[in-house]
Image 1 (cartoon, rainbow, N blue to C red):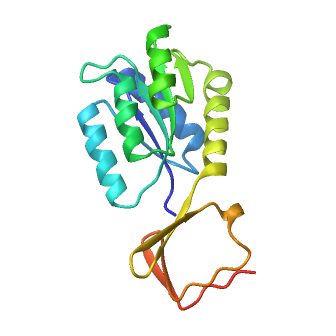
Image 2: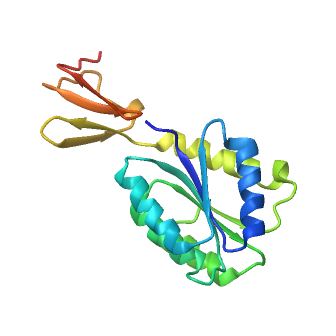
Length: 182
């Protein structure tokens, strides 16, 4: 599996730099940090990432953006990456947006700006969400004949046999004549 992505979007360049800086300082060793200020660019990037087999673990979206509200962006992102965690970022308490986000996109967290200090208000929340994402992520194997099997490693049957399995790890395709797990 390629390095999971944390994807942030905010139309304010100063906020985008700040969230990018904080994300990179804490999560860069384990995650790719991607960000943009444009909703259109974000949605196009997500489709490209999905087509390349990349995985997004977490979205952080500003609520008030000129092209589209953050809740609407997260709805669209959820279609492409349904397992990714979703955080809505806002400068003020918008109860209606929070309720809509919770109901429509199963929002995982509502984060108020500013999040300083990040060690207290940002990192603990995101760390918990990412740990939860890792615990529930589904690994996908591509079985010859274009069958796809999604499974959680802990929920695998004790014995599995396939005539041939192809799987992708960091861009390399591996073929195994039989997979036998006891």
